[in-house]
Image 1 (cartoon, rainbow, N blue to C red):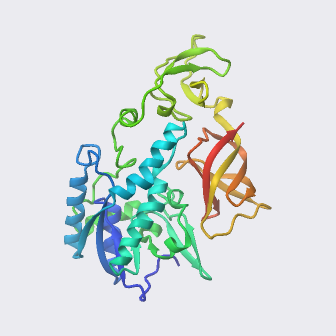
Image 2: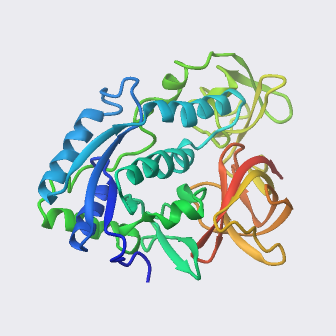
Length: 368
């Protein structure tokens, strides 16, 4: 059974964000007999007190919950580490025309590295977070498993964790439903039991993405073209668009009277051209093959290329049957039984063997 209390690991530091998930994580571990310490991580300082990233309110909520549960609490600032290890990568990728997923890098570099190192210095035996995932140990190997609540499963965002990180991590919410989490919080009088879940990454929050990115990257206008070279509009800079994007293109129906919406299908960085197509299922948006780089294998052993697996090319997606051809352990070619929609360079392709997350890589190129 996953996530069973281990009497030999008594002290756990819980990353508390002020949300209901991490709050119930701390509560459950306290009930299971662990010595629990709550820790709030501040990972962003630029305009962190604005309506988009309400640091102060989140901290107050975390302190309130720690007081109700009866656990010691501290706050730590990882803003420098975040900017150096995550945000700088985020900007480089967008500038290169790719679409990164900073949440994945934040997990491997901040929440399960900088935070883990800090917790160990505090004397902790393990850390815990409110992620919906499970850890299973078999003969000394730690596997990352999907959560019981498939609608909340976050193994996709944790696929770059390694054996050392998983062996020191607990995910108490992995085998319960989100509805149960809110019920537990309400029953125990936690003030944030009905708090809205945060969406997106903190430094962007709910603000318009293009507005935020324009603070750091310059605009470089160019042409919007159809695949056959017909100009249908102007773009403000390729960095500000992603494959599959529909909103914010500034173009209506086609001049041929079609009412189908427009989607971003490709970027030509050399010519500074944005390629757009009409219709959600346009062939230019569908890829049966893709190439991935910087592959990471959670167990340290790469996939068996003689058999089929399942993979996701984006978080909110059903598992898709595929075959994997490894050029070497760090580079892979994926062939899907069914074409994948808007596979995007810079995003992650994550591999599953049933409920076990094996790892994944960064999409370099999608092929039709």
